[in-house]
Image 1 (spheres, rainbow, N blue to C red):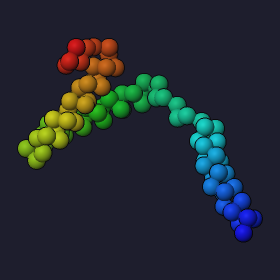
Image 2 (image 1 turned 135 degrees about the vertical axis):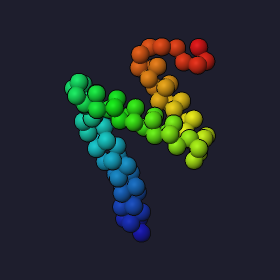
Image 3 (image 1 turned 90 degrees about the horizontal axis):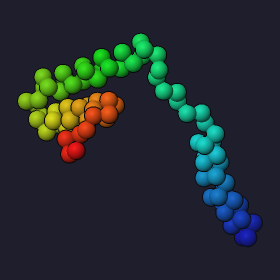
Length: 85
């Protein structure tokens, strides 16, 4: 019985440790710095903003949240003060 308990304890400890080691050793995704990628991302964000505005009658609360989040991130990226500043 002690051998089984030791084996279970080893597995319970080894799996999270192996998972943590795998996550910490994985390379981070590089940030987009290519001007074409940045322009594509900005166009996509603008398209999302327009979509939320055009369909605000379906869910006004959700549209407001989406538009506010986009505006907040946009201001934050440019170093502009937010609504509470």
